[in-house]
Length: 187
Image (cartoon, rainbow, N blue to C red; front, side):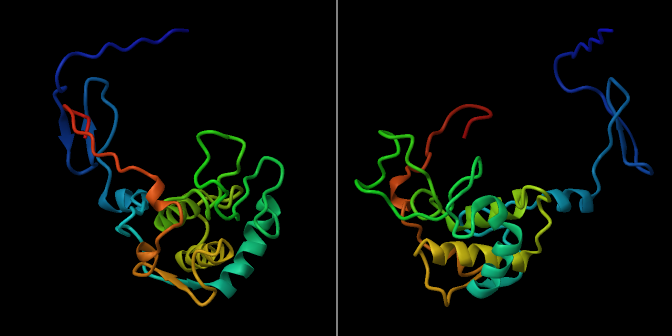
């Protein structure tokens, strides 16, 4: 069976039923999300740290969480196993050779430009078997552990919403900020 839907130009007329939060368009389906629904989905963190939640984590706690939740895929020392990537590794020589040799493993210590991206990724996508299941303190702890294992921060580092954006990653200066401007829909 083939189902086809044709869309007209411009914005469709919408009728709303405020009691049910329903927005009816040309297909008569859909609803406006409630603020709590949007808040549950708004979990990203940017390089400046906007979006990082309250909480903190240390190397020692991170080592335990990593051992329980991450090591089965990424290896006991972050060396990677099978299809799961290596997480620990210092910058290869010559500096930043990834364009000339794609076989070089990209790790947190040699490729990632922002520590906040590490928090964001672990928070949303890890562990693979239960993405998003770690509490913020556990995510901060895993991040503190991985940053210390990559020699980016000392083992005494406490990761939180204030300290994480201040971490300068080893590969940070190898990335070029996208400052393009353009028309509608393009920044």
